Length: 60
Image (tube, rainbow, N blue to C red; front, side, top):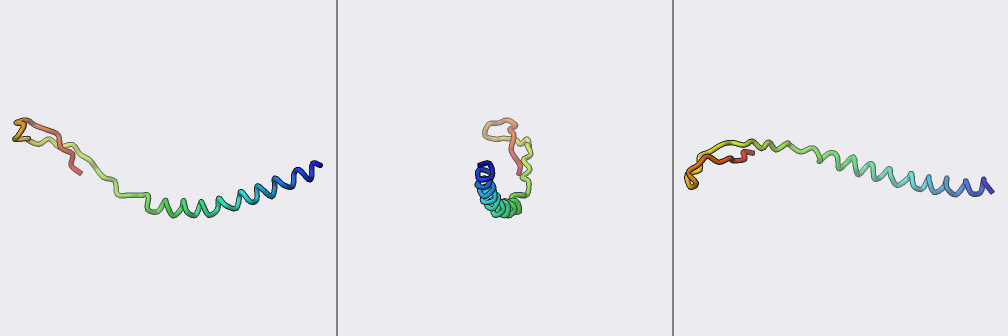
């Protein structure tokens, strides 16, 4: 009884272990384009003539 019950889970685990391998390959491919050049946003003060005041501007 125990041997019979133990056999099916092993087969299922083998079947489950098979699919993760292609997923890992896809994840590896996804990681390659993931690193993108970091966009640096710097706050710079500039004179706003319309508002007649100093405002903050985001410089990329």
